[in-house]
Length: 246
Image 1 (cartoon, one colour):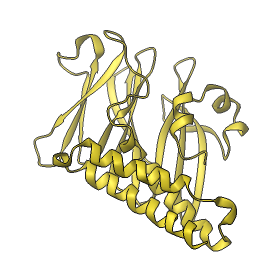
Image 2: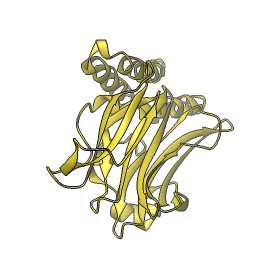
Image 3: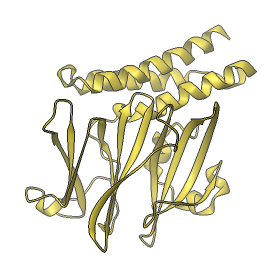
């Protein structure tokens, strides 16, 4: 029991360190990747069958913290690599203010030209998470403003041109949670997402079918197998990397 509790505590601490290190470029990406890898290892070392009822909330807390920072373990490795001259991509650059990062959405074939749309943030942009729709109409990227809170930014092309919207893990004040892209649904009008968050003292995990036009949740379930669209179209890469399926 004590060993499991130590793993729980270490997982949460290493996850926070991963985010903190990522915000210090002088340390290099390897330092953040090491911390994130340690966090994932500590979480994986926990024997769930040996946890007591009183440890359940602590386990969920640690898992969400690790989930929020897990992209630090995958520096520079896109979810869906973009072929040269095809589709969308993002470029990141320092903003005008200290600590600010700007994201430029570009056509992969004309990356050096004027970006399609730009948005800046003081959060940590996990470029490795960028996932472009095969039809070139949407792109998602993970942005983490706090060590325990990760959002999903959705770049979309509509009748008025390109826009950027932020999808948070929950509608509460930023506390503890993350939401992540989990796959594209054929047809170009829907995407899959998974989210975990602490709401009113309770932890909730949800696997969702989201309408790309409105970013509203059309259907959701507490298990991927309970939602046919999610079960059928979930990304194999997401499935291999996420901690939401622990």
